[in-house]
Amino acid sequence: MQFNPKTIPDNKEVKEYLGWRATCVTEAQTKNLSKKLADAICVKSNFVTFVGMSEKPQKVEDGKAYFSKDAKVVYFSLRNKEGQEFMPLFTSEEELLKWTEVAEKKPFRMLVTFDDLGPLFVTNTKFTGAVINPMSDNFVMPRPLIAQWMTRKRIMLDAAIKQMVQVKK
Image 1 (cartoon, rainbow, N blue to C red):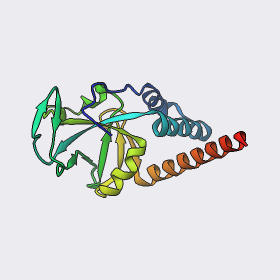
Image 2: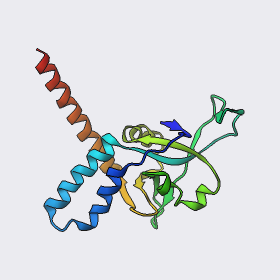
Image 3: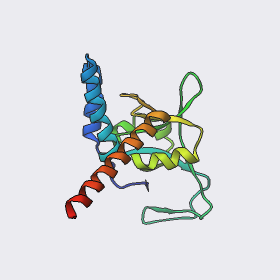
């Protein structure tokens, strides 16, 4: 995770795949798109979200904020009609700024990879899942889907490592 990144990545591949969802008419197309989207989200993407801090910075120098070691990150969330909370993740600066009621408060920004979600969700049990680009694409990833994709990624990495070890023998 990275706080207040100077640049925000533009996850064009994820954004493109999210746009394809409406065009899938067969089960095979949907399954193929799901694999592509999972790979793009799990391996290739860095998302950005807004966060707050439990206390004000002790000092700000050269554009960097310094906090005490006891400061805690406060995650913003979105609620659905059922009251479930989701962590909002954004694919670009443009998508992030669509959340105007939070953006106007000028909170900190944090880059998040898919691998960061596991520890975040263990320590923040209030989240039912994550939602990518909630103000436009609104792609919901419930906890079970995140867990499934994490397991899939781990299996693929283990297989790749085994293959590399066998080639070296």
